[in-house]
Image 1: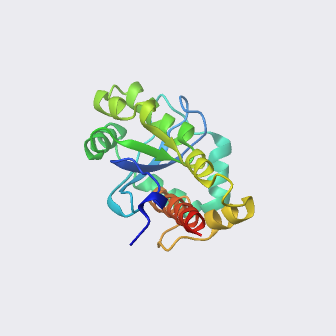
Image 2 (image 1 turned 120 degrees about the vertical axis):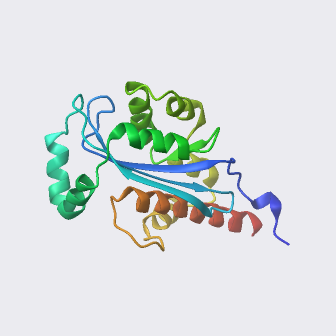
Image 3 (image 1 turned 180 degrees about the vertical axis):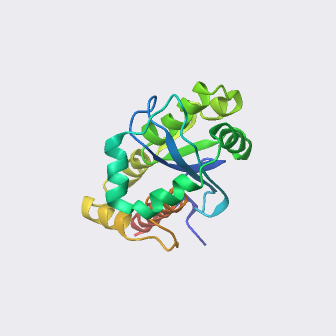
Length: 198
């Protein structure tokens, strides 16, 4: 029988979110892409969201970030731009897709989640603003650091989070990255449980 005391706590309605952007300023630069997955306490994925956003007139891409994209993966950047939809429609769909009272995870939370909340507030999407409230944010790095409690060395932790996860896709494609982040959580949780049982 599995030792229930060794299982980590994952709150209900957990949603891992990853975004790609045209810059790093939450209030000035556009979001390029949103990817998200709903996952459970066993780190199984149940639902996904994926969309690319158009560039708004009041937000301008950072030239440095556009250059970074061109040097990193220009083909992916072009594909994401070509898939762009009106941001208002994407925000509406995302708000509808999110569970009620979600626990929102990101890596790091203060970047990805703050960007989306800024959009929700700037474009007056009340439902999304409510669901993106910071009181429900979970930062992946902080969660893993708290879980480790000295049971995992820095070297082991680095190896766990840099091995490619078993998902097809491309790095810097937000849905792929969101799935990868859930795998990282599971790897750390499994190793901690194993060490606690030893």
